[in-house]
Image (cartoon, rainbow, N blue to C red; front, side):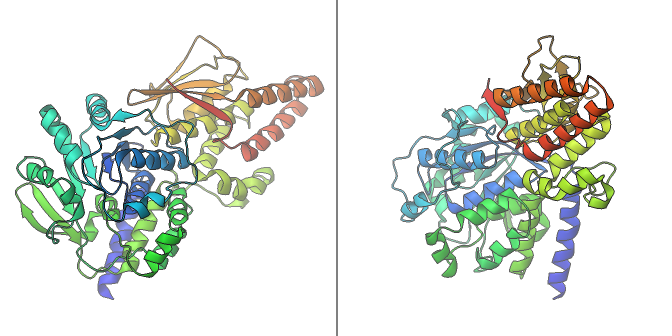
Length: 484
């Protein structure tokens, strides 16, 4: 009991800092290599959910499945999370048979959609990783959820990248004679044992930490799209039968947990630059499940400077806003609610274009899966109201502000609110859909004709209109996104 209480206390302390102290700049910068297993889906979801982890790319290497099949699953998952801006790379198909469980794994959808409107172009893993290393200013952690082959080939071909690798974190159970991940490319494991790059090998050497009903109940307690997606995937009949037979454990999931909450783990052995890591002895399953739940929910929290938590008590809001508060947060999340609330306060009134700008800023960050202060933005809304009000929403929601030097206003003005957003050399053009833009223009025109420009009745009309846009316009449906 004492160990359990102590572990829960550790989790509370670590995760409270992990969730609330986020500055917009991540602690961990990672590239993930996956071999397509179901536990990879859970691990990737955990990485994507973390505020303090920036996923710079995902590569697909043969292991449980072939690279082409993995590529589809990863892109569908990213599309479901609206993180289409994370690049996905492909390894070459190996001249090896897939394992016996490949057929079952292939049947499991990672997302309900079979295709994405913004599927990544097919580029090689080497090309993807090289582009990240060339452009990214921080050291990068390489996460391996399959074999080490992708990273071994990278370092062999580009020894100049060694200094940019902070460490490699790999799931592999060293207490099995030859674990599956190692067996795919044992020579790659041998290669890194001889290198001067820190390699942390994470394994589950117990019969504990099952993916079961208790695990699913724990993650469902968080209002997180990542938890919901994991729960959806694990409704598949073949997965349910494996859970009931206790044939499904936390495997690659532990890599994401280790990176975030290393205090739950212990180093069993060290050989040179290689460390072998397992869970702390006797740690209860429910403690681990609660830690995973906290990670999956962390990305739904707002990042605050003045507030401990952003206020959501309806009594603090005027009646029109209190009425819509609960349903709007349920539909679009607390992060968007905060962005639009702060936009309205700073902008000076509840405006149409400023709200659309805030929604677009959130969508751009969501696309790249980044926090505030990470995007460079050019807007095409000019400097004349009402269209220029859009610029305030962009700045407040994304942190791409004039003071930060992250926003510029083009001399070219487009009737349809539009920005170009850039992250790590990747650019997208986001615009309001033409029918939505026309609706906005027509309804503003009606207000001017009916109430006169800038009259009290006009502003009351605009506020009601803006509240409707705020509560009814889904940011994932009202914009078009084009890769540049």
